[in-house]
Image 1 (tube, rainbow, N blue to C red):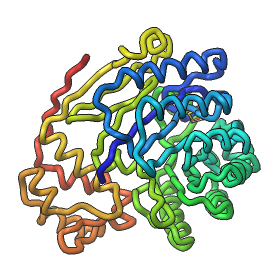
Image 2 (image 1 turned 120 degrees about the vertical axis):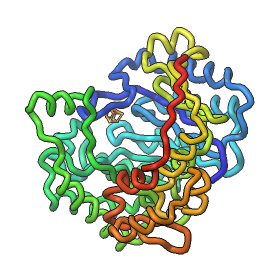
Image 3 (image 1 turned 180 degrees about the vertical axis):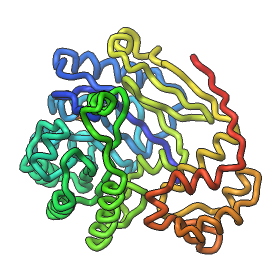
Image 4 (image 1 turned 60 degrees about the vertical axis):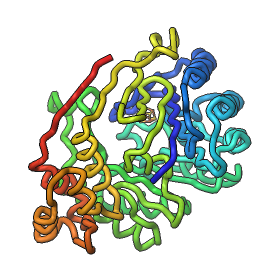
Length: 379
Ligand code: SF4
């Protein structure tokens, strides 16, 4: 995968979902315009940026911005950081803040893909997740995207939420399919320590998601989405032919990208760096918002290459992986096959459904005898 990505973080949300670990600012409509100005200042300060093949406006909730402000932001970004012809331009949207008129403005600025945070089509699961939108609003958001002429619509789903039954997850998947999305992401609920859910688990007020339940729901998603004709191209992502997320594929193939806004990460020339999550510091000087940096050693890059590629359903070339890691992986690959975690197709090692559930284990087996040399440089 070649190309260059630009990620732009819009942190504003109407409320904080209790599982959320992103850089989020609740409310603060008074800051929207100033924050967008800061993003443009940060974009202008970038040096030697190649033409971008993807622009991803994520969050947070980009559609929390007023439609004219969002359009203006995208147009200004495109003036400062030019896009290649046919670039993928995605906006993340939460159903409660989507309108057909708003998405038409976004489409005018070149948005050709929208990723809608539907999360569930079961009302009580939405409530358990702290979502403020209804099932109907999620369906209406898809209709709004279509009527705005946005040809590539993705739905995000979460499984394993508190109280979610297998029947409800089945209904959510089928209901999502009724909307005819081009792309579906389905992620297991993960509990991060610093979130309200994480704190509830720590004090014993809430259970961690049950691993057997998560596995059964994942297998069900694989089955239902394959039956509906979606190609499973990454562990948690399915797409109709040719509409895989080009921006996310950059992340999974160790591609290069620059991130703008609070908490945004960048990767160029073997270095990764990330911005402060503090809104005040960012607004004070968005051209000096870097909070940390790491330079990957050669072995780290090789290990990361293997672990990221392992997430892709196209598999990993064991010859190339072995060369990068400096050792012969054929024995380990055969072990993974014998354990039912993967199959070997020539030199390509491809995960089975069981292997997808235990992808970490497959990766660890492949990396087991490879030394991990961290070379962290804090800015
Ligand atoms: S809408 Fe998304 S970004 Fe905002 S708080 Fe909820 S999970 Fe986090």
